[in-house]
Image (tube, rainbow, N blue to C red; front, side, top):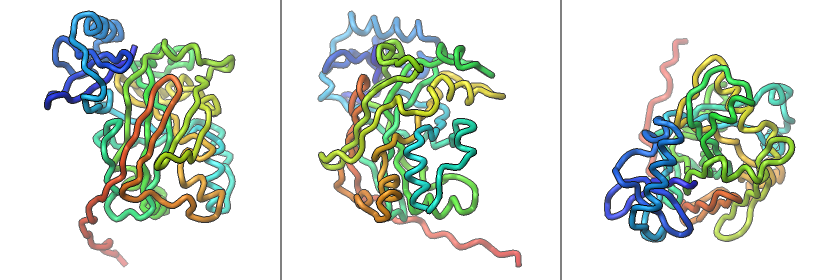
Length: 314
């Protein structure tokens, strides 16, 4: 099944997506609340919507992120992406990358919808996109094995980890972060596709083999396959649960795919800022086989509020 959260006539509500229509749920409720009740409750609400509600054309609604995630872990699981970024710094993939699926926590309050405008972050002059797929956790678990973790993944959605590369590069020199380089926008959408729908795409090694494509202003910049991940989502979920809890609604991003999944990878490989950083008016469109398409327009942001430098102690 496919679940969306949307706005229609000023009202925020969840629904079940079928074809080019969305069937609103019978009662107004947050999709996360149903996820927390369990997959059976969510599917029941979805099935009732399919049979009992008047559908709306998708073209007539504004799609929001499918749910409001309590946490968002964003991983870095594509070796070719890591290699391209490292090349820009005259470096190679560090040995430590191969030891475990590294991630950082990004801002759950910065989620935006599949077709929302994206302001340039304050002070940023090298704005970038990142093409990813995200898994959504459906039930709580702790210290899971990868085999156990499969039953904890409810479904998948597309994730665009918008990145202020100049801010990110500066703040990472402090050996902490990323912080404001990744803080202002993350697209989730267009909807949540339950895991069973994508099972036919699972290859013998356990990876979902989906085609990934990103375009800027209608021109293809990058394309890859999700099966090129170095770890499966089940392995990522197991690692996330090590020594702590993962809970319903938690989002696990795959990390940026390779072969042009972001501009920074291409900058690293080319040795120049080509293609150029994103600018107001640019339209970034991402398509993932079996899930759908998101498309966001970059718009002018605001100027940064000035802050003083640190008070030096010596």
